[in-house]
Amino acid sequence: MSDSSTVVAMSPKVRSRQNRTRQRILVESARLFTANGFENVSVEEIIDASEVARSSFYRFFSNREDLLAQIVRPVFEQGREMLAAAPVGDAGAVMDHILHVYLSLWRDDPDAMRVSTRVGGVHFSIFRDVHEAYRTELLRLLEQVAAAGILLNGDARQTGGLIARIATRVLETYADSPRLEELFIASMRGLLLAPDYCQRALPEGPTQ
Image 1 (cartoon, rainbow, N blue to C red):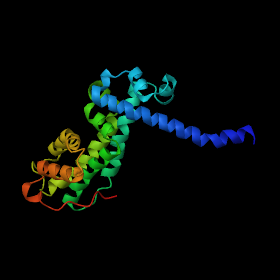
Image 2: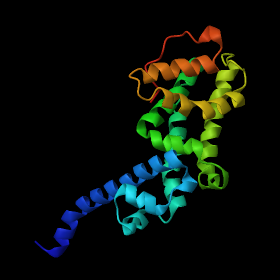
Image 3: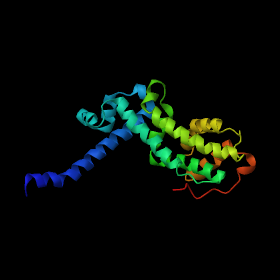
Image 4: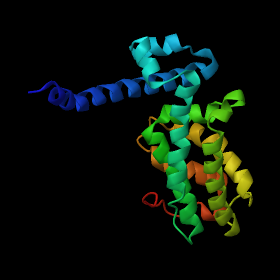
């Protein structure tokens, strides 16, 4: 077997190992950022927690800010895509879809979701564009819900602000419960929707 054949044969293994290393750094850094705050976590601490070489860190990330961007940006990018798949016409189904988007993001990566809601200030510019795209899509859907008269406060922008502030906190509260989905949906409905609408049966899940 030639040397070039050996390199080709090994490439998938190398890529797989590198992907695992990159993912381990993302997971451990998100955990550290959540526990201690982005400003208080050094590259050295991330390297130690991830059990990788310094060269491995810099193979994937140019600095902490680049690492933060690669944690947070996918949350808003994926969330916007899922929001865009909301059903048309039924305001209640639209609201339930929004809530299930938060559930899906949480199940995919709870620490990344925590970080995305807790980083601001000078670091917000790192993901401002994707956050604004997500917020625009969310507001578009909430305006449909508001027009149907089923929001408790009747205001799409206020409701969007409430969701941004409380959704992750509610998910954290019920994270260890086998009834996570049921409790999250019921709690959010109770906070956001008119009382006479909150008793409607839970849906199966978000529209794909």
